[in-house]
Image (cartoon, rainbow, N blue to C red; front, side, top):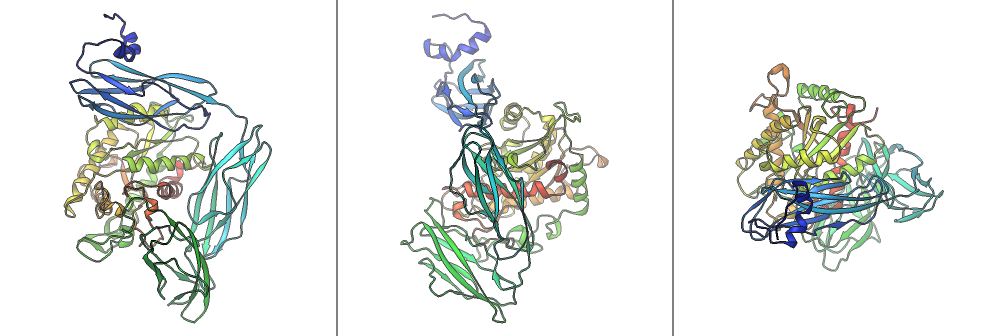
Length: 639
């Protein structure tokens, strides 16, 4: 059977004829499923992703040169191009989600162009659903004012009202940080047209500081909305325990520890279990407030409560009732609740706590001289560059109707974390309406894959992720980077210096590909001790040491080394300003001075990727950073 079609016709019918006729070529590509119909999705919501497997059954390797989604309502969420698919059954994957913007049926295609010039067409169908429901909040900001550290504030009520004509379902309510708690919601909850649903919110400060958070509300049929939460912790005037009443999550049959902290009196504080209370079997407490041990196999999942008494050095007493949550084992190494410096019994100290101290001879701190504060010149430049970020049109020219693009770059962990951040950020009423946040992170996108500007990972960002968000490379002015090679062996610092060099080349490539870029915010990854013995992707201490690759790359730029100039007054500009974004690493349940801990329940079963609670933790740090840093507030927040 012979076929005589125009190029466009052949492209549209190539899938059909690959099944109907013995096409005379060495490469044979099939896609499974060969077409897909998404479940009807409400306008303004996003469907689940669908994975497509692309298989080469031919005898010669084949390269997918480009992926084209004909309609913007279908968006690529994973997979890269160019991508070589090996012969004789080699395969790769692409994932696509459906985000309808009108109440109609969309019949579109995903086109995969290979190196032989043949386009494989995958038909995609999805229908946008309309609703007259509308969710409104009684306040876009809830302020708790001053609350004593170690106590719980008076409750405040946030009413969710359905101002539309159809019922809706409130699916979930997520306080961004544990200092704020929703105590009265039973979800999901149906809210009929014209009806309201009350949420009772409390605030519990753990330190003398200002706390901010976003309360994200998700619904079945309308987009998320949110309310900003604010409160200030003030010094306690009576003896109390500062820890939140809900303790960090424990895992069945696994090790556990938490250090209780007293306040409002004079040292030393002495702790004891209240009469009538009992700790879960296997957990013991000391007079110094350390609760630790390995949960007995008889301890089931659920919440356990007990009361701890505390006395200060003068005998003044206080007490607090705690909830101790126990969850099922995840499959990760959940007893690895902290990690020591190699060949020692000394726990690793986070860079932010290490300061002028050293890790295997290298000084701590995020910036030079053991400091966590940006050097004065760097800080001044960061503020100036941030102030210069303004809406741009697609060609990169200032425009009152233009866009500011914040782009993420990284691997699968960043993909998960930034996806959660996008959800929180887009619901936040304080976000700049001109700001478009694009999740450009991709599975397998390690620094090694970003060394050439022609890399498939860069190409996919440029050709798919940015156009999918209706923006261009000329509108990208800030990037957040979290990515690391799968370092699983080596000796510090040699095991990290190559990663540092890769970060520096990434910075230069970012400047080349995004000519309006101002600032690159780098973050190292979270605690990975729960992956030790489970995964070799990036276990401890290498996950911790990644922070040094970021620190040293920034230090090189501060010191004018390795061709990282970001200021035109110093010569040819070749890189954006590189500064720290939020620093997420903490030593498991041992934690760090600001109270951040990482439970096994914050990690997935491989110990490498974040679970839902882990995603929220990282997203929370990101959100707070972008809403408060002096380099971001001028462009991130609505003014």
